[in-house]
Image (cartoon, rainbow, N blue to C red; front, side, top):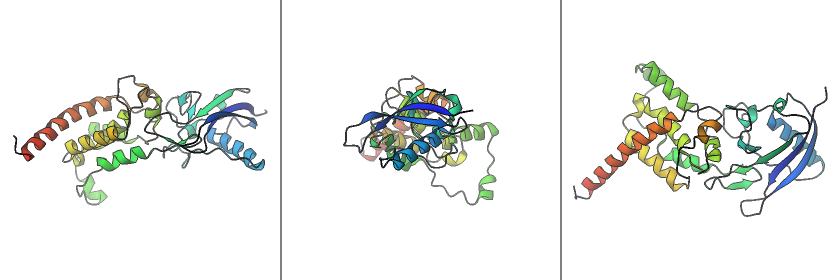
Length: 261
């Protein structure tokens, strides 16, 4: 059986300051067993062979773990298959003769670096603001001495599945990072080790999210639909409750510290 012959419309942009445009390429005899990224590898080999600039695209583990493979495919983050990162998307989902549009994440907080590659360091700044615990939990056996209800452990693990790819931001009409931030908070807030810094962590990470230029959540839930790890929108409800408490405590502490309370 012969492979797929495809027409690719790929966003090309030399740098953040340069204008960008969609450029059309043809690829032939692509195996239906190939992943989407392997198909792009084939195209890049062809471009290099002709002395042309290859397509820059993010990738690393190619196992759906690292979250690097950030591509809009036919207008959908990570492509048409639900619960799948781009690296796990296989060409058997496409048909011979298909046209495929490949673009970068479109969000103000994710500026284009080159071609479909974007700068997602805003996520790093959000995590640096509080996505950790400072309590000394000792070695792994010491940590396991602390009993945790199964429901809490399961909820924490579900939230920890977030790979920080940014699909939620790219899919959101407002460019909101609420699902990402909420997942990172829920991961820690369902565990006893995350309780001492819960309010500070919530206030700091939401503040960093706002400072990075992400938009506001208006409950479209496109984030949940686009998430390759299918993080549930419930974590955002928990974030809103935690932030309301954290904002109150922050204002109360600020009032006491300046002597007006």
